[in-house]
Length: 148
Image 1 (cartoon, rainbow, N blue to C red):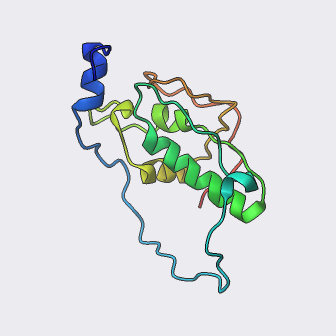
Image 2: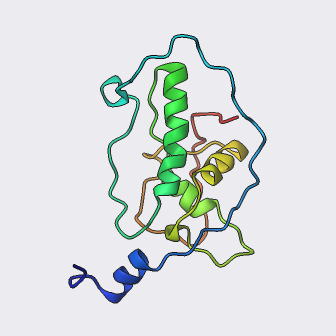
């Protein structure tokens, strides 16, 4: 099954470690829901989600889940879809005290907490590179969505 993978590719996909937490979770718990909730919603036909991404060897699902949560919340609130940069979470939401490559995994809520500290750029302004760059080169354009 893995005969066409290099040793590096095989190692990246089969040898897992648990990603360290970078941010403390807050105590916000939302208990209020609108009274009339439909049984299902197709967010694709409504235009509220981005296209499926190919992460290649960078296991950045946590970053895409984080920005996807913000994108979806923004769409539900405003009716406008804005695709945000998962790459910014990968490159810039780092912990210098740990030797960890964000392409080895992470936590979606770390990306969300990072966005609260400063707006995340759009995917067009800070595109996905399939790898973590060494050092953060945050976009000069401020992100369009304020996360609270």
